[in-house]
Length: 164
Image (cartoon, rainbow, N blue to C red; front, side, top):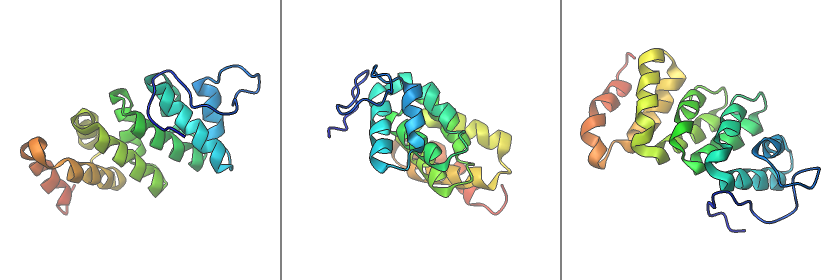
């Protein structure tokens, strides 16, 4: 299956919509909690193929009570890479599940500089959150090179310090 992002097009295969109509992001989100790996994968790939139009549904799914749904939503948002999803991914750095936090951090790393403003804002607002600091450390560590290094060295050093 071709996993390249194709704005507005869904991967081929059986329809997800029970009505036989083209699936909407909302109908695909429901499948993210499936215990069938193939259904979850196809739904996530379909959402990624939809692109930015799927971001509002996926950011909402990041708050779902189901771990699988949150995991798939974080993965999809990271693959889409839309800057408007950065605040939701920053919030997911405090998720109860490590895997969701990791995927959120990886998604923010992929966004590079576009993730920094919401991340740094969250650190100033909620810097006492150990989970947020751990996730921010992951992101800043991975971005602390190249042209960004001179801007991120002090933030990286502060995140390595004993005190928040």
